[in-house]
Amino acid sequence: MVDVIEVGENIYMIDDQVCSVPRMGSVYLINEEKKALIDSGPPSSAPVVLAGLEQLGVRPEDIDYIVATHIHLDHGGGCGVLSKYMPGAKVVVHHKGASYLVEPGVLVESAVKALGAEVIAQHGEVVPVEPEKIQAVGDDDTITLGEQQVLHFIDAPGHAPHELCIHEKRNNGMFVGDAMGLYLGDGSVLLQCHPPPSFNPEVCISTIERLIKLDSATIYFAHFGACNRAQETYQRAIEQLQGYIDVLAKADGNDSLDAAIAEIEGVIKAELEPIKETPQLYEFVDKTIVTPCITGLVHYYKRRFNAKLTE
Image (cartoon, rainbow, N blue to C red):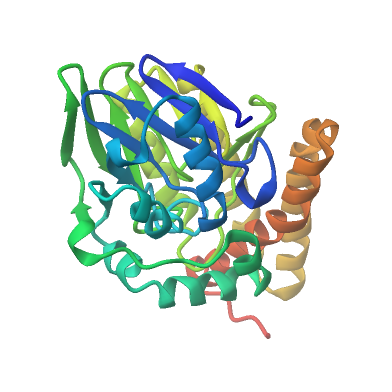
């Protein structure tokens, strides 16, 4: 059985078991007159997503939209695979990311560079999306799914330039992709994971400040599940990001950068303590997520503070 949870009226979360790890990744079905999936998960999760739809009594061919919050493999990488089962579905993606779903070679190369060659074995082979199925969107675009449900797209850079947040009208909820980091262990962990090359914590903060003004009641995290403490969690994310900026701003060379990174890594490791009770999840995050967190920060430091560091 696939873990499927109703998280709002006509909104269902499917645990897509990203990289075979339960409670790590969420794909959402919005089940209205027109039906939309928010995120596809990676290619390897496609069978789980399809099984989740079957459990909900929804046929793949009835899906009208597959919406990628961004094109990273665990969010939009499975769009090409799922679209084969959903012939009538438009693949909705930020206009800056659309070409990478049609010709995913550069996307895959970037993922391997950032996360290592094993990322493809974990996530599966990325299949191109047919160009005619692409619907590119940008800031303030909307899609109407039903009389009470409209999706409003929000440009959300910081984690990636092709990131979208999506407000859904019926429940006043916000799908945040990776713009807010990882929300694990029923909210006991909020982890700012933003790998290179595009991570900018200052831009992330600006994005979150914009989301705060929209005053959503619920946050739907891609990693993992729904949070009904929206304003508190927005502020928590800002404080984490600002804390990283403040620590890095004190560094002025290789040795002090190493010390700053060690300090931040200690904070991250402490943040993960609550999910040690879920060993498979903890091990996956500890082994595959923490390092990209750190490399993203180092990459940002070199750009932001113009550090002249020896390699």
